Amino acid sequence: MGRELMGLASCDDDRKAIINFTIVAAKYFNDQVTVEKINDSLKEHGQAPLTEEEKKIYGVK
Image (cartoon, rainbow, N blue to C red; front, side):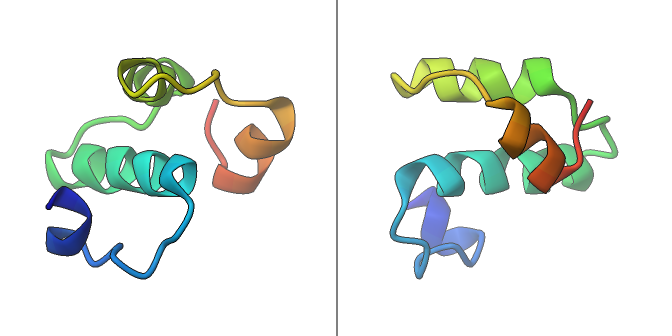
């Protein structure tokens, strides 16, 4: 349901959806997007932490 609300329904990759949702939610609440926040979200959904390549793609530190 959250993916549809955030306009991510077309995202067929759950991992990308989790990352994108976390980024959008942080920006919505004027919060800083960090690797730790994204990794926490991924962990909650049984996913591995961000890779170095993903950190570069999403521009998070």
